[in-house]
Image 1: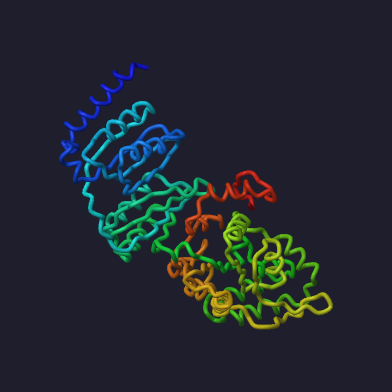
Image 2: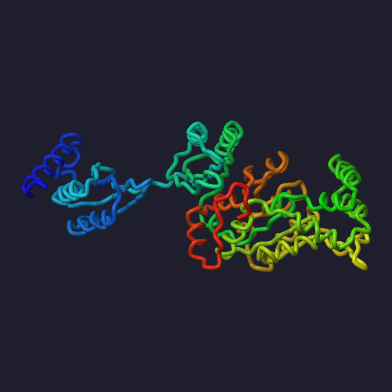
Length: 434
């Protein structure tokens, strides 16, 4: 290492070079201006502490700071107010030379930046977020007059996802542009107002068939009863609008008359959770969420799923069983489209949770009222009608991808799992049910 005098001369030459290039660091201007200090280079412990120590000794005022580390590379911006004495800047340059990091200075306006209107959280999510897709999404943001204030990667598996905080955009224009980008580049994009309400979600109401689980239980029951064609015909009538949900449900259950409880147990063993279901529930429970399963299916299966996952409440339709066989009837109130929304509102009211702090997840037409009632309605691998009506949609086959829409980072999920002695770590999945 050269003698200290040589090092100081080199630092002074660097500082003089910056002064010549910018013409901004003269002592006259420094008395009135604020300095933006930009630091970049290989990260190491003590860099931020060392920089702030130098600023403290020099009597600087720290107005703002932001730091990010990507693959071991540090980027740090410090907005500071300095006196006329510019020795502090020389000390910063000398520190940077010692630590092998680049330090630049820029004189900026010291007036606070006025608010630019509402801010939005834009979540981008896909199995692989290509540069082309990212370019399309960010172009849509720019086209709506939006500025990207911050970008944070939320996950690299089971999907790639990023959160972009956007300001200055017209919401309707922003949403339309991002919807076009979503369709053009085959990625999921969610737009939510950025603020306390987004971070204050406390209740999740979750559909079961084809959402929490991959199956439609009524179809599995029809296979056991040998009535697949009859049940399919009733379903087709309902899809044509010839039967409402309750009438179709009762007709399908009627076809199951005589099915014994052993057949129900066999069906229960065939049910498979949607990939990521356990991670989804486990993570939200750690965060203190209330989780409710609500289904137009059957209590016999939904209660068992709820007990297995440790959810707070389950609601479903009750099959009448006498002498160990199905009678073909239902008892109690029917959980239909309106009933699902009513469950959400009732649980929220009982727990003192504003509906703005609720989330609903579903895939079918009978979930539409529930999705509309929630503060955030999420269509999960849903039909176009449901996708269009929901606040946002997820089309990847992983239920835990919804965590990223809530701003939860995959690294934090894995850290919580690693710190939990009761958690039995499973390998990273393809279609495994973690």
